[in-house]
Image (cartoon, rainbow, N blue to C red; front, top):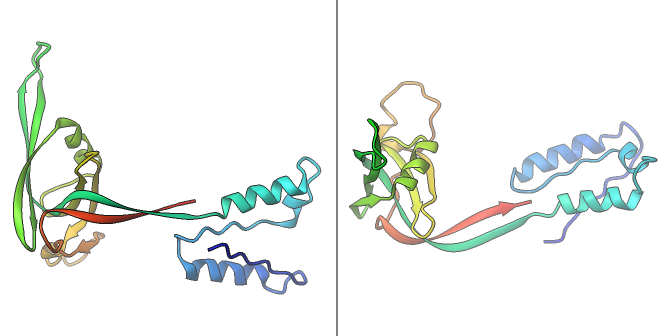
Length: 178
């Protein structure tokens, strides 16, 4: 909290390489803002303005909050369609039936069509591990269930274990903001 690092030295002494190595070791959640001298000594912008902007960019916050979520492996995903209320030939999704499975049970949910849009954006399919926030309806695809890890010899999919505990639970969710 509140730590910064200033490297000084002769040109070619490895300051940039050292800084890049440190930032990669710390990971993507720690903000890294490299600047060069020509940015600071520009005739267009004051030195203090450039430095303040970079200090602001280097501030990272981690927000943790308790959320009520439904979390599990998708066992069923069925959109239920009805005739279009406005007339015409098309059908609209009235609700979605989704089955979620965790280590301590299964649950079938009837979801609003707006949540179905979130499921489609995340490209959720049967066998995926997801969580749905109860208050907002936000959908997050965590990965493919590790039960499917032997399905293909080679695949660019991240396999995750089936969530522990009940399907409906309170979960602490952390978010990093820079």
